[in-house]
Length: 155
Image (cartoon, one colour):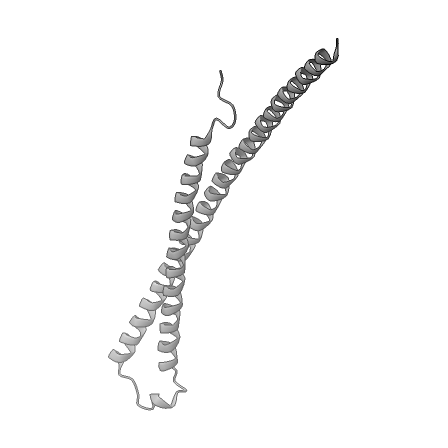
């Protein structure tokens, strides 16, 4: 006799496990993205603070800068600009990774949902079939009782 009901429960379990793993990978990518965003903000804040300190209209900058100090400050500004460019690239790459992983999770969730729908439909079909068999058995029992009662009333 063939097994009735949903026959792909192991596959559904595997799909659920895969979806969980992909979701964890997505969360990891989102955490990396947040880290890169925060680092970008820190570098940007460093640059703003550095530029404010270099502002010639600032009261703290009354003494004239030597050419060496000016070179160091220029070099540091250039270094901050390069750090910003690199960090912007890191943020963009992290964004792309998050988007890709999100798509993978969405596809995996749809696959799992399709299997769940299939399971639901198969379970409903089995339930209806079981109800029909039970009703048939009840009808047969009731028919036998009527025939026994009809025979016992005949003289």
